[in-house]
Image 1 (cartoon, rainbow, N blue to C red):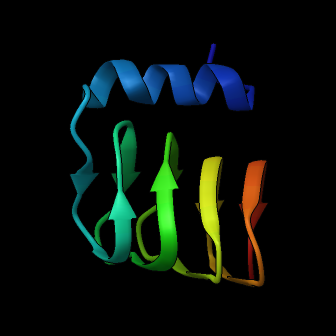
Image 2 (image 1 turned 120 degrees about the vertical axis):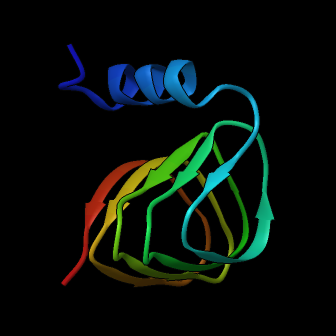
Length: 87
């Protein structure tokens, strides 16, 4: 079951392995257990244990940790433990 944030991220970690899987663009540090979908554009200080869905445009002034992100997201500061669907 991948219906919760924890189970979705656990499944992503299992499927992706330890290295980041980056099919989009990223400006920032990507550490273990990160998946960036095709056509996604991510700008942040750092990202860990998160999934950014294909085509997402993400701009975060801080770090991203334990999140699933889709759509257009622009935030100040850190984001953690969230499922976010921007405009």
